[in-house]
Image (cartoon, rainbow, N blue to C red; front, side, top):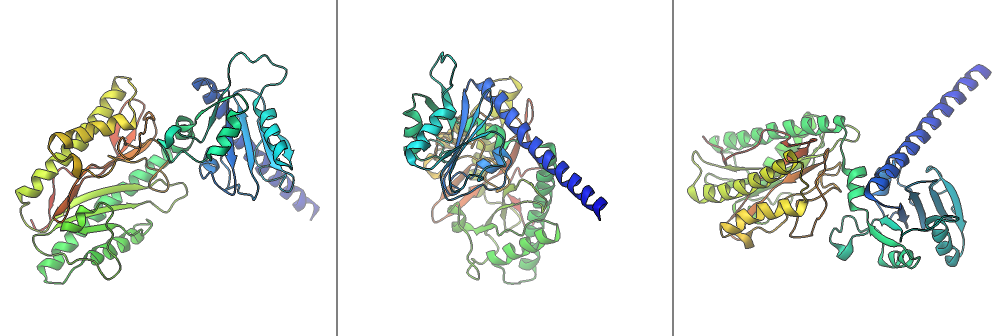
Length: 421
């Protein structure tokens, strides 16, 4: 019994040591990035789980708590935890020394003690990164309230956005994640084509078919392929002119000969830390796609491919490109064709474990995403043209950035699929 207990304690101690080493390695990586970007430190803040980005950045579980806490990672020296007296162990999973406050006055003083160097000559106004976006340009980053930002600024430091840091430590994929995404995207495309084949079978056999029927078919196939059976957009004709139309249970529109069908689906394989795949395909229930649809498709496809080409050219030339700049390229093609007002959304979004990730979005419409696209991140490129009351066309691909290129992670649609051909 004593031997067993000793082995158990040794194993538990080893695991705890490994977990702590992982935490410390992440802090070391953060400090290297702070030095590279010229920051003096990164100040994390949370109140009742207000910052959902923290767990992945710092490699922790959701820390939560009922009282405010701060965690300061300086570019050099030891990190500092600031916690309330009734929850002194709230963030003990993180390395660093601890400062405890009870009254609000001491909270501010402890933040000052953590951020401002003592016994050192301050040669410049300190640059502190926080989850903040000037003018709320990137709302996905704005996790700290204005009052807290004001309090930190009152200490005489400059608060700047952590947007690029967040992207580096939350949106970057591992090689294993790329493999899981590629697996999901490959299976997803196969199931989309199977869905088109199912529409063809039902039409040829005169079986009444609705958007819901196609949705249920795909969800069943996802389950069979080891993927989350997430509901997807199946939109016919005028329904496709509403970008986020979703068929309500039992009330989906019928699918008939001569209909245009849009399928927009996002899911992932059932594996830990798997990123999503997100594709949109267009099909026509007929043998030949009408010119009216083909014309709009060609504009959308050109917009998509132009944005992809601009990103690839930038990386091959070693030049930076932002999400906003890539959006401008795509949007410019559609605007030149006369459909600027019918392109209702951003060109694309970051892809993470939830589908919409926290890296740079391909967006200069809904937000002004000035973040650079960086290696080992992924995003969608999905321009669309939506003609209210008539039809909508969207084409979506998933793109992954390598060291010096941008690759589509799966074969992609180049023309509207003629379902009955």
